[in-house]
Length: 177
Length: 239
Ligand code: FES
Image (cartoon, rainbow over all chains, first blue to last red; front, side, top):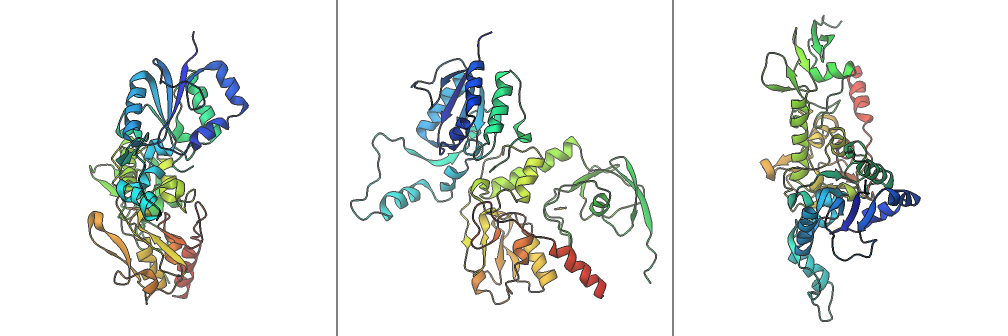
C-alpha cells in the first residue's frame, strides 16, 4: 500500500497552526515514515499537487486568492481538514468584518502615516470585503478548533487519519484553546 | 415552624426521585447529580427561562419545557438527554456564537467561559450558520470594569444580580431582538452611572468575557461566584 499523500496550506492566519505542527518535533520524523508531505509551506513545491489524500488548511478566506486556492485544494484532495480557529471560525482575521475592509486599510496605510500614504496593491492579492471560515466556501470533512490546536492534538488527529481512521477532535480541542 | 411541604414522586432519566412540590425540575435534577446544561440560570438569582438550554422532554407532552422554570408534578417522567435535545442545544449555542463576535482566542475569558465550555461539552467544533459580525461597542468608561458587547449573550444575570442582590438596578436591557443591549442607568456610559456602587457582582456572574475587570488580558479573567449562594443563605437565615 502506498503512503497517504499529506498536504498543508496556509491561508489568512498567523502561521501559528503550522508552528504548532512543527512542535510535533521528533514525531514529525515518525510521521514522515507513514505519510508523504507533498505540499506545505515547509516543503519547496509551488503548485498544489493532484491526488492529495489529506489536506490540512490553516487560516480563513481573506482574499480572492485564498478563495481560488481553497477551491483548487478541495478539488484535488480527498479529505479536507479545517485546521485551527481561523479556518474554522474566521477568528482574528474576521475581526475586521464589523469595521469593513476599507476602514482597516485606511487605518493601516493612511491614518497612521503622514509621509505620502498609499495602499500597496502590486503583487498582493486584494483583500475580500468579508473574511469567512473555509466551510462557507467549500465542504469541509473534519474540523480541528484551537488557536493553535496543541501539538498533541495534531499528532493524534494525523496519526488517526494516516491510519485511515476518522478522529473526533471535539473530544480533544475547543475554540480558542 | 415551617408549613408541611408536600412530596411529589417523579422520574428523571429513568430514576425514581422524590421532590418537594415547590422545586423546579432543574433543582431536583441537580440535587440528584443529574447535569442539565444552563446559561441564563444561576443559583441565588431569580429565574427567567431565557436561554432555553435547559429544555427537557416530558412524557405525554410534545412540547419541550425549560427545566429551570418548570415545577415538578406528581408522576412526571422526564428525559434530560436525547438526540433531539442535544440537537436543539447545539443549535442554540451555535446561534449565540454567530450572533455577536465571540473570538475565544483573544477573549479575556478564554478558558474560563461558560459559553466556550458548553460548546465543547456539546461537541460543537463549528458553527453552521453564517456569522453576523455586528459592529458593537466596548465601554471602558468605568474606573474598574469594562463591558464588551461583542461577548454578551443577553443572559441578564448582571441585570438580576444588580437588582436582586446588590439592590442598585444599574443594569437593564434596551432595544429588542438582535438590537437588544445591556445598558447602565439610562443607557449612559457605565463610568457616568450614579447608581452603580462598583461592587463588581455583575462582573463575576457574567458567564462570558462581556463583563471583566480592567487590567485583565487574554484568558486572565476567571470569575468568582461563591459569594452568591453564600449571600443568599445569610439573608435567608436573617429572615
Ligand atoms: S437555564 Fe433554563 S432557560 Fe436558561
